[in-house]
Amino acid sequence: MASFNLAVIKGDGIGPEIVDEALKVLEAIGEKYDHKFNFTEVAAGGCAIDCCGQCLPKETVDICKASDSVILGAVGGPKWDNVPGDQRPERALLGLRENLGLYANLRPAIIHNALSDASPIKKEIVGDSLDILIVRELTGGIYFGDRGYRDGKYGTEAYDTEAYSEMEIRRIAKVAFEAAMSRDKRLTSVDKANVLESSRFWRKTIIDMAKEYPEVTLDHMYVDNAAMQLVRNPKHFDVIVTSNIFGDILSDEASQITGSIGMLPSASIGEGAFGMYEPIHGSAPDIAGQNIANPIATILSMAMMLRYTFKLDDEANAIEAAVTKVLNDGFRTADIATKGVQAIGTKQMGELIIKALN
Ligand code: IPM
Ligand code: MG
Image (cartoon, rainbow, N blue to C red; front, side, top):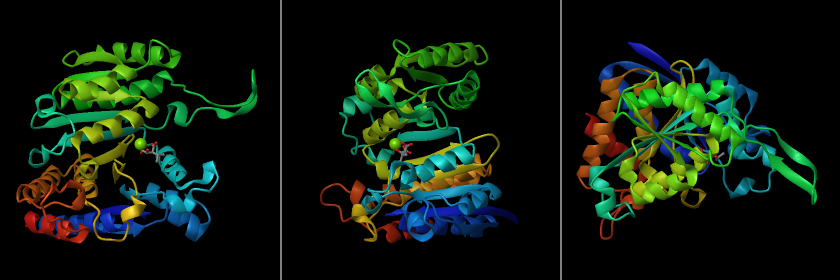
């Protein structure tokens, strides 16, 4: 029997309730395929500020580092809106990414067949299905660059800096090219090379790396155009690779094209198999604790974890198939329910997915 040690950060808002369902699904997978998943719960985000006086206690980082993989719900909420910027719950996310070396963020934007009506984009544009993978650089760029206040032309000014080294561009590009090789072999690199020096370096480095992947069709797009093409012709995209901040923005846009942000998982990975897996959506404090949040994004994040970190393809496929079955059977949480459909709760959705597994 294989045994896996997982650090679990339930976080704030709906985090705890959606993670609970995901852990139950993992346990069901463990029973079915004879694996043991050991969970160690650690604090990060707003709840960590409340319990331990800081958003990312050292103990949390240490336990995450010592585990095989990390599961995260969501962090943040209005309760901590007045906390100083460098101590906000969201800082915990950045700290985790940096300390755990998670430089690549994989964000699939997929339209499930059963939900093809959910997209706000016209059917003739989006079709019956959509499958885009955004590969976002996660530990560099303006999120981590030099920042501060200084005397400027018009008095005191605040600044942030975008910088990328060749090493950082190469390692994220490698993840993206390899992802493209396992998919439709099309890669779009998004930058702002008409204006930014860091983007020109980005583009030059990507072009150089493309020589190693002759089978991949590579194109380049300015970020403003990419934002437009995502709604005008989303089928253009297979894999997108881009910087930290552009990836942040475009992945939110792509998720909305699917019409169901409550469905989208994500993986943050670095060197080796270790990763952090979390839903794309936030902590949704307005619906927390009411058993109405959609646990599917977190459950699908478990499938990503099984596939990428543990190389358990059958188990990952089983989770995805179970989710598809439950959707095909017509069950919906409130966020994806169409008019006239009786929505089910968080727990029921979890139970139905487990039932479909067996
Ligand atoms: C995301 C979020 C985070 C980010 C915030 C909460 C720091 O928007 O994961 O996309 O900007 O990376
Ligand atoms: Mg974001």
